Image 1 (tube, rainbow, N blue to C red):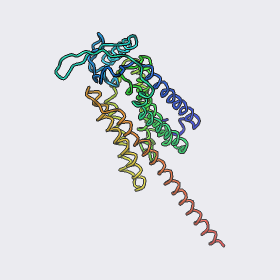
Image 2: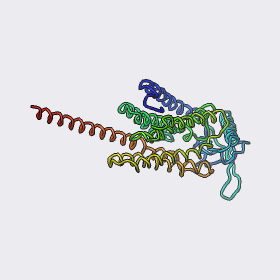
Image 3: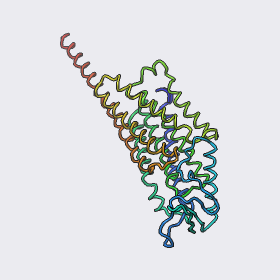
Length: 358
């Protein structure tokens, strides 16, 4: 959406409805895939299972197998991860019991035979309901913003929230899986997750037009096309297998810094105190959520260390669908008040001249 006239309101509504439909489908398919996936069954024959077995039957599992996302810089590392996921799924799908091996604290291997079963709906919902709830809030906020704001910032924010909902709907089955997922569904969720994450770049465009378009856009009105060009290029390269899932991590840091710099510039140059408060509100939420995601989730995953639970990030991200629409609402009310005051002054001036003429 490079400009106000780039897409008609009807076209925007059509794209938004299409993304909303995709989100609902992802939610349903995600629950179905989790219910379909075989996993270890916990029953009275043993009290607990090791968190990270090093071997299932004759399959040696690398430590990277247990990463929730394929956050690798190199394509061959990601392909190896996918091969392990598919091999483990085939073993779980074709057997009723498997022998797992893990390393004890003493450094000795220990084996245990475990039964394979499919999880119940209750188990699946316990793992994922918070993430799905966050996604629903994003969807509701996106629809609300789109209905109440017909401006370019409103449209951009609505699409940002839609992509945020798609991100969490795609992530829910990935982080909620017991061991792995059916390969065809697993790849679908990862691709949808990558595309949705790329779509979040609309927030950078939002920063360039909120509360008013930056001066650089008047000189270079096509500048936002760079954001969307980057989005389409990275998605194309990833889906074609040329780049890996984690290869865009440095660029994510760049776009986050650009977003912060743009909002800081608006804060510095804006003379109106009320608008400065709205810019501050719009700055703090993306800043906190972005840094929270990079430092406590994405960076540990890329470095191979244990990241924080994804549900913590999902809940923390709720700052966005509450603070950003609030700033947009406040801006609209402020502009309406200024318009009323301007109209009132004009009316008083007209009445004064009418009285003067009489």
